[in-house]
Image (cartoon, rainbow, N blue to C red; front, side, top):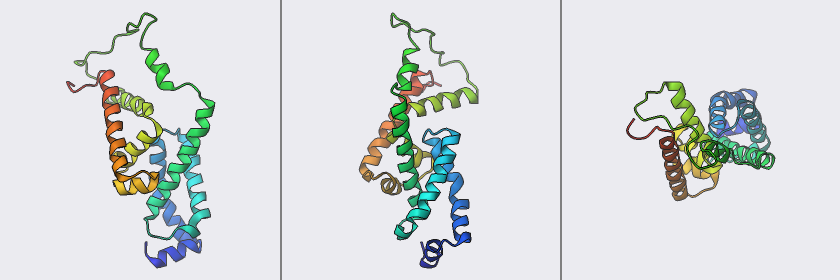
Length: 191
Protein backbone atom coordinates (compact mmCIF):
# COMPACT_ATOMS: atom_id res chain seq x y z
CA UNK A 1 0.00 0.00 0.00
CA UNK A 2 1.36 3.42 -0.83
CA UNK A 3 2.19 5.83 1.98
CA UNK A 4 -0.39 8.56 1.11
CA UNK A 5 -3.25 6.04 1.17
CA UNK A 6 -2.01 4.62 4.47
CA UNK A 7 -1.83 8.12 5.97
CA UNK A 8 -5.43 8.79 4.90
CA UNK A 9 -6.60 5.52 6.44
CA UNK A 10 -4.80 6.15 9.71
CA UNK A 11 -6.35 9.63 9.81
CA UNK A 12 -9.74 7.87 9.45
CA UNK A 13 -10.47 9.83 6.29
CA UNK A 14 -14.13 9.05 5.47
CA UNK A 15 -13.51 8.69 1.73
CA UNK A 16 -10.54 6.36 2.26
CA UNK A 17 -12.51 4.24 4.72
CA UNK A 18 -15.57 4.19 2.46
CA UNK A 19 -13.43 2.95 -0.43
CA UNK A 20 -12.08 0.10 1.72
CA UNK A 21 -15.62 -0.93 2.70
CA UNK A 22 -16.85 -0.63 -0.89
CA UNK A 23 -13.92 -2.56 -2.30
CA UNK A 24 -13.85 -5.39 0.25
CA UNK A 25 -17.30 -5.60 1.87
CA UNK A 26 -18.98 -7.95 -0.60
CA UNK A 27 -15.93 -10.16 -0.90
CA UNK A 28 -15.66 -10.48 2.89
CA UNK A 29 -19.36 -11.31 3.13
CA UNK A 30 -19.03 -13.93 0.39
CA UNK A 31 -16.00 -15.39 2.17
CA UNK A 32 -17.86 -15.48 5.50
CA UNK A 33 -20.76 -17.31 3.83
CA UNK A 34 -18.25 -19.64 2.16
CA UNK A 35 -16.77 -20.34 5.58
CA UNK A 36 -20.14 -21.72 6.66
CA UNK A 37 -21.65 -18.77 8.46
CA UNK A 38 -25.35 -18.05 8.01
CA UNK A 39 -26.27 -14.86 6.18
CA UNK A 40 -27.15 -13.05 9.41
CA UNK A 41 -24.01 -14.17 11.21
CA UNK A 42 -21.90 -13.38 8.13
CA UNK A 43 -23.25 -9.82 8.10
CA UNK A 44 -22.44 -9.43 11.80
CA UNK A 45 -18.96 -10.88 11.37
CA UNK A 46 -18.18 -8.57 8.42
CA UNK A 47 -19.28 -5.59 10.52
CA UNK A 48 -17.02 -6.86 13.32
CA UNK A 49 -14.17 -7.13 10.80
CA UNK A 50 -14.49 -3.47 9.86
CA UNK A 51 -14.78 -2.40 13.52
CA UNK A 52 -11.63 -4.37 14.35
CA UNK A 53 -9.94 -2.92 11.27
CA UNK A 54 -10.65 0.59 12.56
CA UNK A 55 -9.49 -0.33 16.06
CA UNK A 56 -6.23 -1.89 14.81
CA UNK A 57 -5.53 0.47 11.92
CA UNK A 58 -2.64 2.14 13.74
CA UNK A 59 -0.87 -1.25 13.85
CA UNK A 60 -1.38 -1.81 10.11
CA UNK A 61 2.01 -1.10 8.56
CA UNK A 62 0.98 -1.35 4.94
CA UNK A 63 3.35 -4.24 4.16
CA UNK A 64 0.42 -6.50 3.35
CA UNK A 65 -2.52 -5.64 1.15
CA UNK A 66 -5.54 -4.21 2.96
CA UNK A 67 -7.56 -7.18 1.70
CA UNK A 68 -5.12 -9.65 3.23
CA UNK A 69 -5.30 -7.78 6.56
CA UNK A 70 -9.12 -7.84 6.41
CA UNK A 71 -9.23 -11.55 5.53
CA UNK A 72 -6.95 -12.22 8.49
CA UNK A 73 -9.38 -10.42 10.78
CA UNK A 74 -12.28 -12.32 9.16
CA UNK A 75 -10.52 -15.62 9.75
CA UNK A 76 -10.08 -14.88 13.45
CA UNK A 77 -13.66 -13.62 13.82
CA UNK A 78 -15.01 -16.76 12.12
CA UNK A 79 -12.92 -18.94 14.44
CA UNK A 80 -14.35 -17.08 17.45
CA UNK A 81 -17.90 -17.66 16.18
CA UNK A 82 -17.22 -21.34 15.55
CA UNK A 83 -15.81 -21.80 19.04
CA UNK A 84 -18.81 -20.18 20.64
CA UNK A 85 -21.28 -22.16 18.52
CA UNK A 86 -19.34 -25.40 19.13
CA UNK A 87 -19.99 -24.99 22.84
CA UNK A 88 -23.69 -24.63 22.06
CA UNK A 89 -23.82 -27.56 19.65
CA UNK A 90 -22.05 -30.60 21.06
CA UNK A 91 -23.29 -32.95 18.32
CA UNK A 92 -21.46 -32.94 15.03
CA UNK A 93 -24.16 -32.41 12.37
CA UNK A 94 -22.21 -34.60 9.95
CA UNK A 95 -22.63 -37.58 12.26
CA UNK A 96 -26.37 -37.04 12.49
CA UNK A 97 -26.74 -36.74 8.72
CA UNK A 98 -24.53 -39.78 8.13
CA UNK A 99 -26.33 -41.94 10.67
CA UNK A 100 -29.71 -40.97 9.20
CA UNK A 101 -28.69 -42.69 5.96
CA UNK A 102 -28.77 -46.15 7.61
CA UNK A 103 -31.28 -48.18 9.57
CA UNK A 104 -30.54 -49.94 12.87
CA UNK A 105 -29.10 -52.99 11.04
CA UNK A 106 -26.66 -50.85 9.04
CA UNK A 107 -28.57 -51.06 5.76
CA UNK A 108 -29.36 -48.07 3.62
CA UNK A 109 -32.51 -46.34 4.85
CA UNK A 110 -32.90 -45.10 1.30
CA UNK A 111 -30.58 -46.29 -1.44
CA UNK A 112 -28.36 -43.61 -2.97
CA UNK A 113 -29.44 -42.44 -6.37
CA UNK A 114 -27.80 -44.18 -9.29
CA UNK A 115 -25.08 -42.37 -11.24
CA UNK A 116 -27.14 -42.43 -14.43
CA UNK A 117 -29.85 -40.17 -13.00
CA UNK A 118 -29.53 -36.58 -14.11
CA UNK A 119 -29.79 -33.91 -11.45
CA UNK A 120 -30.63 -30.32 -11.95
CA UNK A 121 -28.40 -27.49 -10.81
CA UNK A 122 -30.19 -27.02 -7.48
CA UNK A 123 -29.64 -30.62 -6.44
CA UNK A 124 -25.96 -30.50 -7.32
CA UNK A 125 -25.55 -27.20 -5.48
CA UNK A 126 -27.24 -28.71 -2.42
CA UNK A 127 -24.89 -31.70 -2.56
CA UNK A 128 -21.84 -29.46 -2.79
CA UNK A 129 -23.11 -27.21 0.01
CA UNK A 130 -23.73 -30.23 2.20
CA UNK A 131 -20.24 -31.54 1.58
CA UNK A 132 -18.71 -28.12 2.24
CA UNK A 133 -20.63 -27.97 5.52
CA UNK A 134 -19.06 -31.30 6.46
CA UNK A 135 -15.51 -29.91 6.18
CA UNK A 136 -13.76 -28.91 9.39
CA UNK A 137 -13.30 -25.17 9.94
CA UNK A 138 -9.65 -25.08 8.91
CA UNK A 139 -10.17 -27.17 5.77
CA UNK A 140 -13.24 -25.18 4.80
CA UNK A 141 -11.46 -21.86 5.31
CA UNK A 142 -8.38 -22.85 3.34
CA UNK A 143 -10.51 -24.34 0.55
CA UNK A 144 -12.63 -21.19 0.36
CA UNK A 145 -9.69 -18.78 0.42
CA UNK A 146 -7.73 -20.73 -2.21
CA UNK A 147 -10.48 -21.99 -4.52
CA UNK A 148 -13.26 -19.42 -4.27
CA UNK A 149 -11.44 -16.22 -3.36
CA UNK A 150 -8.41 -17.33 -5.40
CA UNK A 151 -5.96 -16.03 -2.82
CA UNK A 152 -2.37 -17.19 -3.11
CA UNK A 153 -0.99 -19.72 -0.65
CA UNK A 154 1.22 -16.95 0.76
CA UNK A 155 -1.82 -14.74 1.41
CA UNK A 156 -3.71 -17.62 3.02
CA UNK A 157 -0.63 -18.31 5.13
CA UNK A 158 -0.65 -14.73 6.40
CA UNK A 159 -4.37 -14.94 7.15
CA UNK A 160 -4.40 -18.31 8.92
CA UNK A 161 -0.92 -18.43 10.39
CA UNK A 162 -0.29 -21.79 8.71
CA UNK A 163 2.85 -22.40 6.67
CA UNK A 164 2.54 -22.33 2.89
CA UNK A 165 3.40 -26.04 2.82
CA UNK A 166 0.68 -26.81 5.36
CA UNK A 167 -1.80 -24.76 3.31
CA UNK A 168 -1.13 -27.18 0.42
CA UNK A 169 -1.67 -30.19 2.68
CA UNK A 170 -4.92 -28.79 4.12
CA UNK A 171 -6.19 -27.89 0.63
CA UNK A 172 -5.41 -31.42 -0.62
CA UNK A 173 -7.24 -32.95 2.35
CA UNK A 174 -10.22 -30.65 1.79
CA UNK A 175 -10.42 -31.62 -1.88
CA UNK A 176 -10.13 -35.32 -1.00
CA UNK A 177 -12.87 -35.03 1.62
CA UNK A 178 -15.12 -33.15 -0.81
CA UNK A 179 -14.55 -35.74 -3.53
CA UNK A 180 -15.33 -38.61 -1.14
CA UNK A 181 -18.45 -36.85 0.14
CA UNK A 182 -19.72 -36.12 -3.36
CA UNK A 183 -19.01 -39.67 -4.52
CA UNK A 184 -20.88 -40.99 -1.50
CA UNK A 185 -23.85 -38.85 -2.59
CA UNK A 186 -23.74 -40.38 -6.05
CA UNK A 187 -21.79 -37.58 -7.74
CA UNK A 188 -18.83 -39.74 -8.74
CA UNK A 189 -16.50 -39.61 -11.70
CA UNK A 190 -18.93 -41.54 -13.91
CA UNK A 191 -21.30 -38.55 -14.03
